[in-house]
Image 1 (cartoon, rainbow, N blue to C red):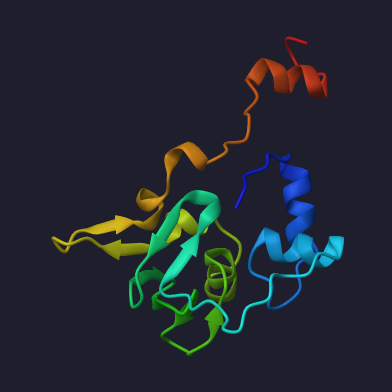
Image 2 (cartoon, one colour):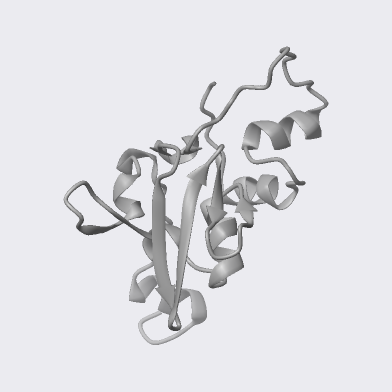
Length: 152
């Protein structure tokens, strides 16, 4: 695999055009560009869950959890997707899992796991920090200038 840099709006447009069961940018773009997937006699077996965008992976059976409005949710990494233990439904991304349980949020900060010592930790801690793209924030003066407020 190769890495390409795209702007946030292009990235969002790629994912907005996603169709089931596409779970990666590569699968979405193969369809859009008419590029056939390599053929093999056996589909590759995925275990656990991986998100190559953030250098995140966890083994088969890895469990994450959260509590939202008094309801505890648990999900398990199985066969390249998340299985919501509460319902048995499968989701191919952490975002889809969160959207289905608690609605729109930053899923990386909403879900937790237990480390080898039993301590509760955010799954965000497992991501490769160098791959996280932060939005640029504006100062108060920049915002005021944009909207014609005081100091502009």
